[in-house]
Every structure is written in structure tokens, then in C-alpha cells.
Image (cartoon, rainbow, N blue to C red; front, top):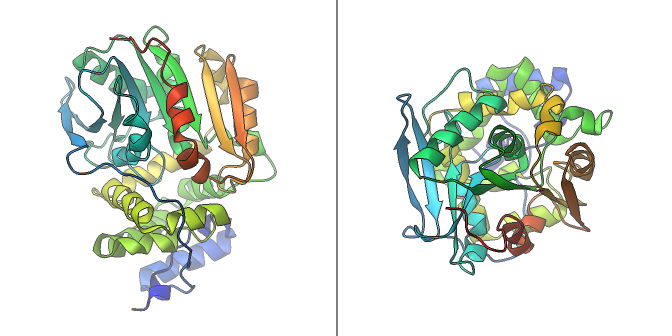
Length: 343
């Protein structure tokens, strides 16, 4: 097989229904056409080493287990609950490690959602029952107060957690977020098209996910094949070997149990969920790149308008990833209260 035969670019959500089903048939036949993205070296980044991530599973009273990763000092005074995007897992929180080293009073607890990474599956999983899992973890860790961060597709889970626990969640930070689809009605983005396809053709989407993640397990450089539809600034960043390999590891780990939970998690974003945004009373800070073509800046503006207590920061020229990497100090600072005393 050549590189091009395995190509499954993130551009596939832009396909028509006929083209999508044809591509799915090609996946089953083992044939792909296309050309891998070739990027140039971007920004270097300091990622956590093996001894920096404390990761494993936490047993819950319901009998299930959740995969977790902890960064920062165990005795830190402030805790951030991190909500990963798609198609990654708890390890995605590593992108904040460089900034976290400058905040010894803060730690991050990142959780795999059900069926992703190390977490047990939950066929009934939805946005609004996710807070039950977070609350169980908060009880186990004796966390009376904590903040939440949601990145990309993790944003509705972060907002749902804040809504369900107004007395415990101090603030919400959203980076390159997704929003209810009415936010950009008439001009759907790549994740929106993917969510619609996952709703209508979950098996086909699962097959395509498998085709890209299986070879990635053998060669982490296969991540280059995922970013064909990303903004140019994002492609440059993801072409840097350290960044590319770290994100690829998070993608591979996300599909440890196969594609089913990942496909479900993106499919439910196509459902209507704007009605409960008004119930999120905590301060919400939205960060969004103006050149983001995976999650349009209109999404960030929609959330700022709909959430009762939100402010937005929009970075000119930044994409889905680059703004979060370059401004990670600001992202982390927005999630840490000045006193940093919550426990």
C-alpha cells in the first residue's frame, strides 16, 4: 500500500451524500486516493514526559471505570477539570503542560469520556448525563470547587458540567469551541458535516476512522493525513514532529476500544442543545481563532451571545490549534481564580 491509498483527510465531511457513501465503499474495499499533506516545521512545544502524566483508571460506585490523566502537583490548591475534543482523549491535556509548569498552585484532571481511551462504554451517554461522571470523580478527589476547560468538541461537556454543578464549578473556559448547529446555519463547518454523517451513516464513519487510526498505531506520522482540510497555520504547526507525534498518540489512545464511542460522541453534537445554555450561570471565557475553518469564529460569537455571563477573545490569523498553543498561558489563566483556593 502507498501512503495515498490510506488517505482519510478530515475534508471528508465536506463530501456530498453520494460521494460519502462511495468513499465508505472504498474503505471497505481497502482503496483510498489522495495525496498526503506536506507541512513545514512549525512552533516547537514542550510536552509532558512519561513521569509528568499520572494516568490510569478510577473505579466509580456504579461499577464503571473512567480513564484519567493528572498533570501538576497533587497538593495544588486549584484543580481544573479538562474536557478533550474529537478524536482525542485525556492525553490531549498535555498541550497545557508547558503553561502549567509556571503555575505550581494548579493541577489538571482530564477524563476520557465513556468508551474512549480507558473509560468503560456507556450506550446511553449524552451531554447532560456526563456531569454525573464528573461529580463522582469530584467526590472521590474531595473537590469542593474547581473550574472546567473544554476544547473544541469538549465544549458542550464542559458547559453541561457547569450547568449541573453551579455550586462547585467556579468558571468555564472554552477553546476553539463547537456550538449548537444553528450557530452557523447555512454555512456548515467540517465538524458539523462530520456529525451529520455520523448520525446518518455511523458504520461508514466508523470504517473510515478505523482506516486512519490502524496505520497510525504503526507509524505516528500518519497524522499528516488527517489535516488536509485544516487552515494553513494549523498544518504548519501539526507538521512539527513533537506536536504531530503527541497529538497522534492521543488519537491512537482515543480509539483503543474501537471507533463506536467516538462516532457516537460526534453524532450527538448534531442534535439540538441550545435550550440549556441559558442555565450556565458561571463566568465563561471563549477563545477562538479567526482563521479557524474547522470551527468557525461564528460559533464562538454565538456562545458569547447565548451564555448569560460570557466574554470572547478572538485571535486574528489563528486557526483551530495555533491560537490555543500560542496563547496557552492566557487559556490557563482564565481558568484559575486569583486566589486559586478551591479545595
